[in-house]
Image (cartoon, rainbow, N blue to C red; front, side, top):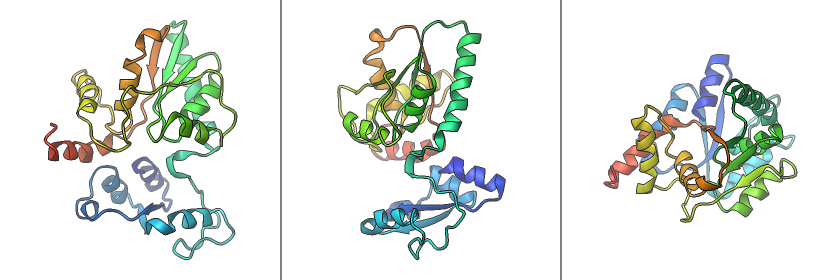
Length: 238
């Protein structure tokens, strides 16, 4: 959200973000990614929960829901970036990874990245057939993630989906999430608190089975850390 808003501001494009109704607390205390995106000119359209799917589906019809207005000529991005159009950008990322591997004289490389819709992991696996791409589902089960990826095409053989021993719900706060966050922060690296913790925990549980070097592809989102840390403080976890 914040990254797209920043891009649209630079390009002088309008950015309409369609979402389900926000909570009263979030309305009163806008922070993190939401605040950054709004500050960069994002227009927020809140839709009642029961109408959300219908409104989103109308974007792909000749005439959108009246609450959206005319959308002819607009670029429509699905939630989580689950779009075939992501293939081109991720192919560029894959080329950068191959160059880095060559420059670093690394023979065997496993690329690790967390998955919402799985779009990044899927297209990295397609673009890097000689590498193992490892991911974990942030939303739902492994089966649900595979289902999402199959909208993009057949699952690549070099894509490995791993799970944590404990089940975690997306967007919830867990004290063990702060451990890898603080560990990397002490090394001068800030990881996001929404995607990275579960991926790092899952990776730690299978580290002995990983051959060669590991490259972690960060999903960004550190602007949202301020609001996440506030939630942790509110619960007395930090």
